[in-house]
Amino acid sequence: MTLSGRISPLVRCTAWRRAHELKKGILTVTCPDSAGIIGTVTSFLHMHGANIEDCQSNSTPGNVFSMRVHFSLPEHWLSVVREAFGAMIARPYGMEWAIKWEDEAKRVAILCTKEDHALMEMLWGVARRDLRCDVTAVISNHTELQKATESLGFKFHHVPVSKDNKPEAEKAILDLVGDVDLVVLARYMQVLSAEFIDRAGAPIINIHHSFLPAFKGANPYRQAHEKGVRLIGATAHYVTPELDQGPIIEQDVARVDHSMSVADFRTMGRSVESKVLYRAVKWHLEDRIFRVEGNKTVVFS
Image 1 (cartoon, rainbow, N blue to C red):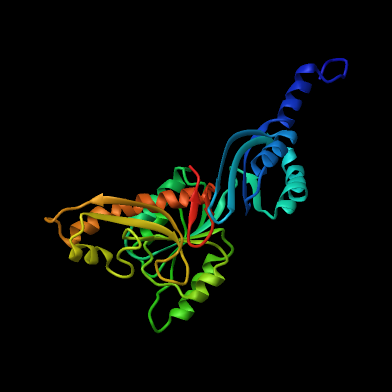
Image 2 (image 1 turned 90 degrees about the horizontal axis):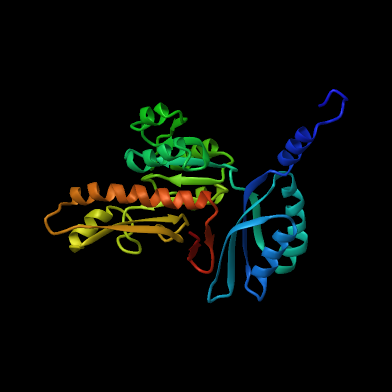
């Protein structure tokens, strides 16, 4: 403010810039495909002051359209854009859609057992802020990973599970999970009941230590070794009541040979499992995964 009591041009300019500072956001859309959707959505965003930084879309043979738009917008405009988009675009096209700021952190609960590789890779990613989420709880049916988990500042909960107490244990786990956006099974070696999956109220991502659909169920490395395979793999997928048959998100492989034992397969597979689960969780947190027709997913880069 000047000596005359007026607001100086510099202060006025700074206030204007703060009020119009751009913030990055993400729009996701799924709907029946029809002509002109991309143009309609991008024109709407442009007319409402958004700068489109990236736009990816896909249409399946079954006529399911998916779209992810990365944009920037003055922060105070988002609520107006959200309301207008719902009324003007989403409703007429029958869209399932969401619009949010890029830096909004999802709430995540992690289930694990004894092996640390998948869990620790994730927790390190959260600590480095590469995985943008809030880990609300790490829950295990064993205590081996408690010290490592708590050393990074995350809450650890021990819930023993046996064939005699499984319903009670699953209820206790659900109580600890609470209201989250995602549940991750970081080598959690228990089969979840259909009731648990339904009551979780959030998508569940699992890492299976084989290249599905090969070697489902228990001991996939032993199964692979007995078949004499030359490639072992890992698969990250969404969990459904059918064991190891949920929509696949990501897969990768490693080469093996005749001289390697089952233990060698397991050792080599750990790094593949960690990387595959990490990528799948990261893509989910960044709203890059779309579940489309049947058991398929679309993953935008």
